[in-house]
Length: 422
Image (cartoon, rainbow, N blue to C red):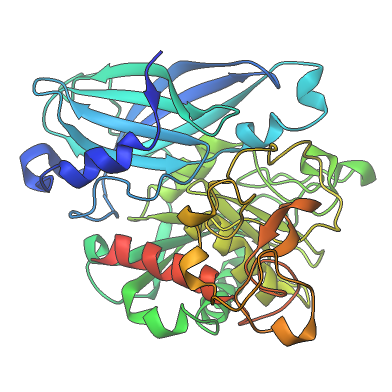
């Protein structure tokens, strides 16, 4: 089985720049597929291909250089075998695999990868990260762009609007905000919420210093009913995206498995990142790297939730807390370095923030007030108290705090902003 590990970065460093116009058109090829399995098994199978009218991504940075996520899609020009596009990402399926339920049964999740629309036949290779942290190839699929079964329909045509317009999508981070649980009569409220929540994002560093590198869009996808599902209370709402609290039976984990509806609605605008805004006053949310982010719209902690979750969805940041209940089991295996830039098991600390730790700072770093604002290596993070370390005693990725990203998280966010906006 073909293995993808550190050689990816070496390969990318030796490759010439991929010229967008040589291989792509400024539209999107959307590949919908099914991801099935259990805690110890997985399989891929195709669903359908879509052509979408916009491409929101960079025309310059087409090859992934971060190696974040539990999965990687690599796109090759079929004739020359040249790597022309790649992206790391995670999904709800990868999280579900670490739950107790996954040890007892098999499930199937709908997933999507997007890429600029190819001019010639391409080969899409799908990789999954194994227990040792290495990418292994699990599936491949050839796409001929002239295939008449590639649907050009916009399945959910909705009105869209600009919340913030800073420039051409190819040179900006394009964030689309999609409503769930807002009725047609509440669309004006949604517009105001988009403006409010975009303001929240740019209250925090390093977003505030890079506001001119973002476009923010809103899509008016209304629901039949207000609110969202709360299964233990027998509350079920007819909403556009079918979001629900108690995802994986966690009270405040607010997510959706309705991937196709989400992607159909997002297709109304060019986008790099999807944010779902749910019409409820309960505390909750969630986010998965390069998949989507979720936040509630009417809670006293809403600003924190919005920025914290976008740290996951956009920059691949890991949770630095370790005292809250989670459904995951052995989320960060012993002896494996986490891929998240702000967590380490010290297995390969030189690949993380070691260069940001001063020589006089002990590793691991004591939980002492003398090191309160210091970049160090503090034990506790990634949902466990022992064996996983974070960069600072406190951070927006650890506690309910606004504008409190540590230097390591800020650096990771800034690098991702540059990647999409160069």
